[in-house]
Amino acid sequence: METFKKGEKIGKYVINSFIKKGAVAESYTVLGPDDMMYFMKIYELQSIPKEQLFEGKEVYEIQLCKELNTDENANVVRYVDNGEVKKGNVVYHYLVTEFYRGMLLYDAVKQGGPFDLEDAVQITLCVLTGLSFIHSRALIHNDIRPSNIMLQELDDGMLMPTIIDLGHISYMVKGRPTFVDEDLMPYFRAPETFRAVYTVKSDIFSTGALLYFLIFGKSPWEIVDLRTFNGDKQKIADAVKKARKQDLVLETDEVKLPDYMKAILQKALAKKPEDRFASAGEFAQDLIEQVMPELAKKMEDNEQNACAEEEGQVNAGPVITFKKGSGSGFDNVTGRDELKEQLRKEVLFALQNPEKAKAYKLPAINGVLLYGPPGCGKSLVLQSFAEELGFNYSIIKGVEMGHIYQEGVLDNLQRIFDAAEIKAPFVLCFDEIEFIAPNPNAEGEESNITPQISAFFSMLNDCSKKGILVVATTNRPDLIDQAIMRVGCFDRVFFVPQPDREARKDIFMDHLKDRPCEELDFDELARLSDDFNAGDITEAVNEAAMTAAYNDVPISQKILVDVLKYKNPTYSTKTRIGFNKN
Image (cartoon, rainbow, N blue to C red; front, side, top):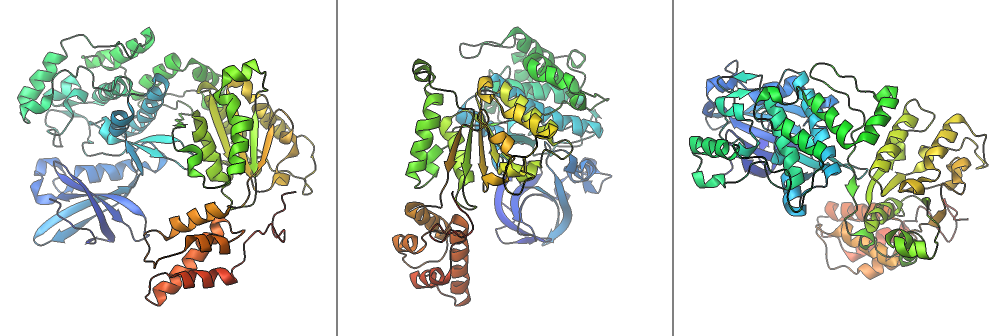
């Protein structure tokens, strides 16, 4: 049973929900003073032996998390805060870390099955990047396993693996560990850890076991269900040692690995530490060179991304994982039936039916541009399009990428195109591309071709031959450098209008759910909001909610209608305010 309840205040944080009770700590989600969500671990100080406290006073995880201070590494959980709280006569220490929305790697495999080889390697590379950072601080993680890795979904659609639990982090251990070892996953532990020896090499073994799990869907040498031993440490250790006397299974009816991959797994999972990779960096480099030779070659050719190994560290260039198109597709887009039918007929059909496309000699589609006023749902159509197609995809936000005349942007774009080619067939999505390739001519006329726009044009041109489809959005096509609007870059251009009546009804229903409301006529609300975009509807609902809250009444149809009567749409197709399709 959890110690703290929802709504209780811990320092400046408020308990939101209980996650789990571990060997020495309880985990919660909490709301911070900035109304952001965070993870919190709470330790009952008097229940932890003094030898497992840093200098006998502080929980090791808290102290070492502060030392790690992972702002500079996206693959390791970020320290936010820590403190002390007293409840009754009991003193608790707490650690606050960044909150990640996503799915545990363990759950992803159990629900979706093993990953294909390239995806498994990409995830492992991210974990090794995080480990390299930890090891560079002379620290050992000691508990790399699938349930400690979060696949968090980023804004651009990528799934980024992050090491989220540092409950067993320590300095090198040769004798008595400074952490409880009873909850370590036996099949992911290196042989020497059963003798209380924890080093960089034991983290290498655990990461090799993680890679094996990603490929085969089970732990290496997983033969006996260890739960039958009811937590008996000696019986569990003996069972694991016995299982590891057998040969490691590296091929099944479902999984056929190339010889070089078998060799990598055997080296990472070597029973003797001296036979394993010397560092996380060496492990990563071997994966890149053997499994991803094209990327390795491009990295060697690019001086800025050449591997620069230092002791305990590695810069392995761009490690990018991409999302697989497997969502609801166009089902997420309410209304806009004409646009969806156009996209299905003119773009998706040929890509999803390559044999028919070949027989009928349908031309390859290189690029698609979606344009329309802000708030009309172009970004949603963009992501839904990628999911409908079912290819790997990534969404690059133009405003975050920067423009091609800024230092380093072209290099970053080239790396993205290179990685997409390796993962082909691939949908490369650019949201608000006018930020990346702005037109220096205010009138929208074609400007002089600069070296930068020429380089970007070369990346975009004939992408279809590399298995890449470029899909971009823009609010203003005239703000894009016209050099990349030529045939060969964007072959199809589609206008995305404001939400139609059915879409507006859906937006109202979404924004009003879970709020105190009277019975509402959503059809009338959709009719009264003609020409409103999603942002206009959001603003109207928030105004109605504020009025209702101030008067301490539920949100009613009358309040909503009164708001809609005096509000005007941001962009009107009737008066051509703000945006002209033509």
